[in-house]
Amino acid sequence: MKAVITNSVPLNTGDAAILRATIAILRSAYQERDLEVVVYGEQTDIAGRLYPDLAFRRSLHGQVAEWWGWGDKLAAVALLAIAWASRFGWGRRLTGLLPEGLRAGIEEYRTADMVVSSGGTYLVPHYRLAPKLFDFALALALGRPLILFTQSLGPFVGARQRWVLRLLLSRATLILVRDERSLGHLRNLGVPAGRVRLCADAAFALASPPGEGRRRAPSSNGLRIAVSVRDWPHFTNVRSRQGMAQFTDAMVKLVQMLVDKFGAEVTFLSTCQGIEEYWTDDSRLARAIEDRLTGTARSRVRVDARFHTPEALRDRYAGFDVVVATRMHAAILALCAGTPVMALAYEFKTAELFGRLGFAGMVPSIEGIDGSTLCATFRKVLLRWQVCGDEIWEKVATEERASRSAGGHVRAALAAAPA
Image (cartoon, rainbow, N blue to C red):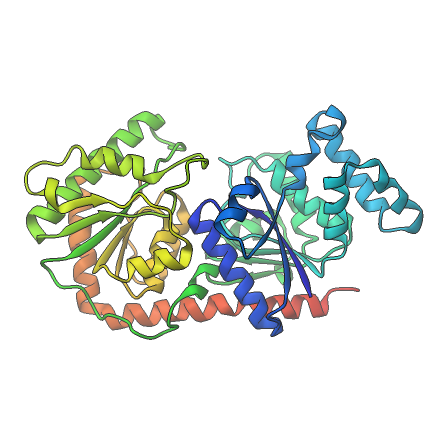
């Protein structure tokens, strides 16, 4: 059994958690420890250093623009045509026109039992869709089953964008979405309901140990708190600089309150940090917040700026009483460790998840956030954990089980797909 996983961003530890969990879910579903997995993405030389047990390849979309110096679109169309022709004996010879990397990539896709587009959030308006859609088109041109792992996606705007997405997604073997809003966006797009399943985020499969060791609730003083922050360049109601200034002010006020009112020790610890070559590092914003703290907080707050693998970060979060998470996969890894979470949302995916866990109305949006609201929400969330901890942990366990059910959905979809 061979799986090609595409659209992976393993330098982001949250995405690496999705990748690790996806592989574990597929291996469990097919009971094959030796499931062959090849991962396509960018910055693969660095990813290979961080995760030497995985086989990484540079994305074919990233390679195609360099092919003979052609423009991106023309070269992409030519490669798709060659990929389609390579399914037939006479067309196989055309791959000889390709450089070695593209030729090997076409062969790897062609011989895969499934092409799995990594879970995450990238089919949304503020991200570039072309590289993702190219991967979908390539898998379909080669006649391979296309699986979209647990996604949050949409809304889709623009007649041409909607047409292309409908064309490609309607031909996918299976699309796994992780929230009702994404399900509605696909329904609105016209994707056949039979190709779509609702499933929890893959990273919940990293819970260790599964369903056990849950803490009931945090106390109200002497707390050990981890905080995940992030830069966000896609504000909709204000300019990004103003939005980030508001977010930073709010986090300064929250951390100051956590120390002064709860006697907390606070550690900034996030999923995107410690990799110089990656486009962002959450610890830089964390240090800017730390520098603005006053009084006792200056000695009770630290920044852990090191890189951590998903498993190591999960285990680090296990040592805290509460995690305040702006990054959604920081929140999920903390829940996987049995640590209560207060979540902030920069995209609808976080509000959808924590709404299911019983925190509807208690997930502040990064848009227009202010310190007073953030501090008041922390108190509400803390009380919610103290009063309803058992109920919340049962809902987390439901997410864990739902994440592992993805393997069964994949098996069933592949078994039903035409040969």
